[in-house]
Image (cartoon, rainbow, N blue to C red; front, side, top):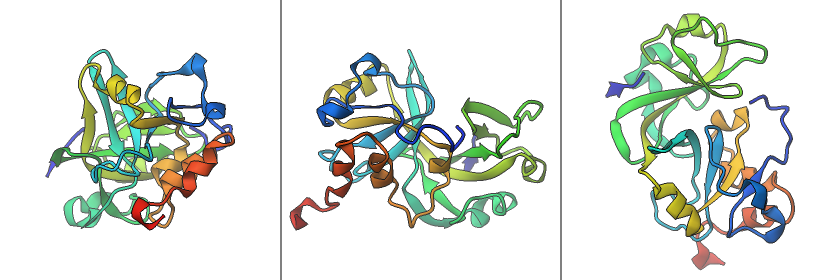
Length: 217
């Protein structure tokens, strides 16, 4: 496999927008505002297996397109099997996560800084938003453990070309929310998709109870 080189005390009801969301959840002044640190939550109508009920952390968003990783798709491969030097710093469960369908033969890593820690002076860390950083897997995990609370390693990523994500937003395929640092390291016992919805302004939390399999409703 190839290796690619916010404080939790934030407002518990971060910015949220989707044309398909309940009216009370819409913030027309911030509509379509995607930036690094934004979460894309699959809409209840997005049933395609690759992205159904996914939570994607946006790492890059610019005129050339958008790039992010799925936070809630764990693989059955242990980090230790591929990158043993990073196993101790990997958040529980210490497994590789499937970041998306693009370049799944390449690994990338996101980390969460310890409260009060500073990435300045660490060449292997590139700040993204708040306490979240991109981690160069060629770096020294022992050195970085001084400032990192934990890391998550991903196989592949999710990418959009010019205007593609905007088009999907127009089709109400995604809902937007702001990430908290703890979202990056959430354990598999947590339903991250539902959890993010529940911390949004009312009545958006009602969407969290939408069945995974609508045929059971």
